[in-house]
Image (cartoon, rainbow, N blue to C red; front, side, top):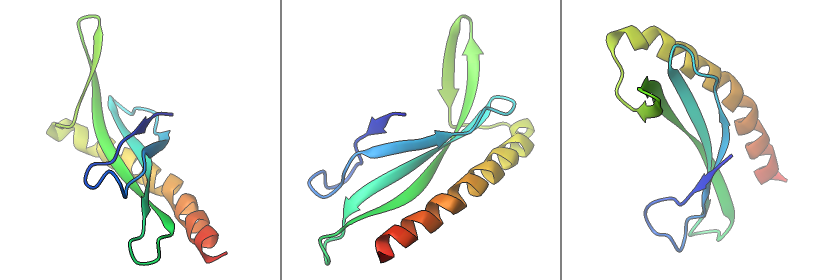
Length: 101
């Protein structure tokens, strides 16, 4: 799992952490990220999840990724989004329970 810096106000945001990546279906995958930030009013650390959709393809010997999809990719993209939703719902419920503790 990788981490990347959030954009915006770097002093308030924390690195994003990749929670999981769906297995590519026909060259299309979803990366789900947990994004941490400090709530400016409460000064508490909070999080939200975001999804990046990617197309994976091979050009010669090199694997590449794109965020552009063809009409033929749309049904596979829907499957990947459905998978991300199924995986995200338990994460969202767990995050809400943690913040209510």
